[in-house]
Length: 240
Image 1: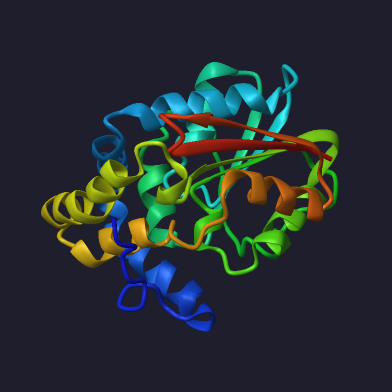
Image 2: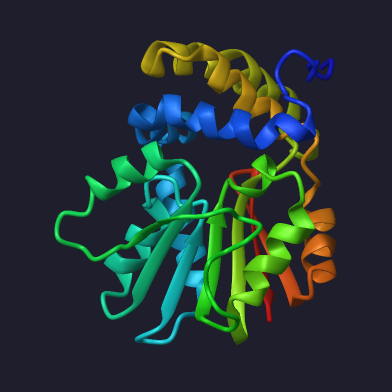
């Protein structure tokens, strides 16, 4: 299948942070629902697996970077009630939706730049992100910053979709991701452009083996990854 053009969708690097911030602000109200629909509910299983790979101690501390509406952090709190979790994001509207989901659970939300996290060195037992790195211009810088606030021996864990060409079901996945998802996204969120950007953001994203190398370049060790859903999604783990 012909590779989709990225020019009409992806902003230039200098404009990407503002573009992404505004885009997520527009779709915050429908973001969780679209995640369920796009993944046929599998995104919840991926987050549970991610939390498991954090290998948190019983009263550990977790940082969810690019937390959005807090799904990963809330999953961790549900599975390990004794831990402490914090979520950071630079889109206020996403965090506002997340705060409305608290239902008595303690999850502080902090507005922050992924490349300059407002925490001291060696603060958290695990630092996680879900579908964040594809939206970041400086991926090694983001990973290095996550490693900085992780305690020695702690883990940095990231969940990402893989480039469409990487999957064994590449042509089918590309058709669904680039043709079907924007239509569904337009109907559910009223913002078809946002759900055209999200698939296109995977085109230039590194394959799992390359992302593993970037994590090593950021100073992490013992890096490994697990591919899920026929190789369309990968969870990477590195140790500080």
